[in-house]
Image (cartoon, rainbow, N blue to C red):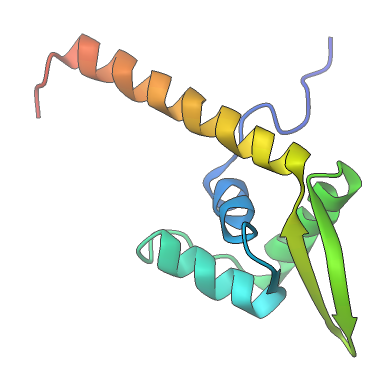
Length: 105
């Protein structure tokens, strides 16, 4: 059985969807991802536009405005659902690790 696309989001995927809770163009998305992640995640244009196309194809985001070469995007309800599912998956992973490690640092 083939693995479902976007079953687990990578950090760049997660932060792109998080950024798109507000309408953004590509440059704004890259800046917001870096800001939201505290500089830990940086996305170049090649990665960004590849992921935007995949998200759009899966109806997780929608293009909302075009002005010259600039395009603005926003997350869809399906994208929000996937983002919330990923947050819960990450919380469960964290709980499992904390339970196993017993608070060790």
